[in-house]
Length: 290
Ligand code: NDP
Image (tube, rainbow, N blue to C red; front, side):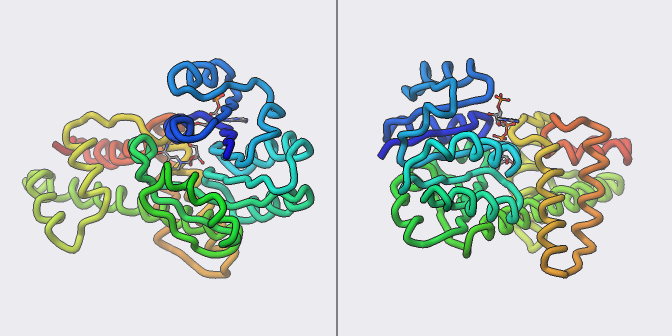
């Protein structure tokens, strides 16, 4: 099976490196130097034109949103053979996925939305959680590809449903980050040390990925390393709001958190790390969690 990978960002780079260790893998990146560096470091083959991926069996994409994926599909689809599978790891809009799937179907190309969770570290260790929308027969066909990059693959429904689940996942991530920051700041202001409070929360029902991993490993040590852009998290909250609107549902907690994340982007810039959402809460209270 030959792979083509489009988008060598924080997630795409390590995913494509794992795939290149197992399958012949061609890589394309908007900034071509990144693709050449990947080829030199990981044994992939860099292509400078998307048509260089025309003969692969599986096209993987990991771009900011479905809009950039749709543009890549428009350019590459006329050159793909019937029977090719397009595996989209982007976190995008469900409706965007459905439109892309319909466009590819006219060429006999199958599409799965397969957004990921686990960050650059999970991508490098092959332990991503992947939520897949699309046909089970197509998923079975590309299972060896996903096995290289995922610790857990869950088929969640038809095309677009992987994107919907991912949007809700990231809405929950942002909610836990914001709410845990607010709680720890209030406790710190009352003299309860944040690391002491976390010892209790993480043995109790207030725990989350944010409290168990992000606060101890990125906030309390003041390291705030970069892994996932705040601007991309804001994009995901917009997608979650779209999922709620499409369902005719209401989600007041989501609206509040989305507003906080957008305000954080205004304050810190879209290129800040997502965990820096906590900094905004700290700055409002004029204290640092340690
Ligand atoms: P990055 O910003 O690190 O990388 C974005 C990639 O997309 C780069 O390869 C960039 O190319 C390319 N790109 C950007 N704009 C365009 C464009 N207009 N046309 C073509 N290529 C373009 O993003 P991430 O890797 O962090 O995220 C990618 C996707 O994965 C997003 O949907 C994100 O929400 C999701 N995701 C990210 C996670 C993370 O922890 N980082 C975790 C889970 C999901 P160039 O090098 O030229 O800029």
